[in-house]
Image (cartoon, rainbow, N blue to C red; front, side, top):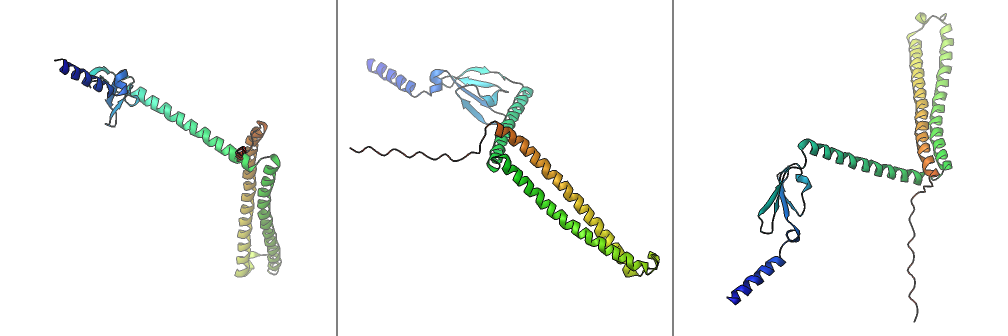
Length: 226
């Protein structure tokens, strides 16, 4: 009898050693979530706050049942809140990334002004080319007007080829005017973009922000000679 009792006690001690830590402390929580998955944890399960959970004891027997902590509407509202928090964190991280990129590209006002002026100069060159083309079209139009005087300035009496040339020059002139107007709008867009960048950069410069640079690794001290 004594031997049997000792074996029983030893078996019980060994079983206690192999109990999961959560059972040793309290219980195991289990539930089936909204996706049909069986979940277990050593604490109430967040994915099952909207449904019943069971707390199991060391023997696997249900000790108690926990009712839903949230209604479906409350759970949906909580998930929406968490989604917005994630979006806001991502937005802030993206904003910091853009700020670092801006500072790396424009460490000071002079660098920013130089790039703005370069972008505007490129558009001005395109406009200058278009203006030269417009001047050439005006000269061709005056030449056609001189030819039209041979017909008394009456377009109805002018030959077909002369009428066709007037139409071509009129259409080309209209195209050049629209093109130049578009380029002027492009200059406004460039200035607006650089103005926004400058406002952001001014705040960063005033805050003492600097472009991220690689920090040199300190050399390990040489071992002392014995």
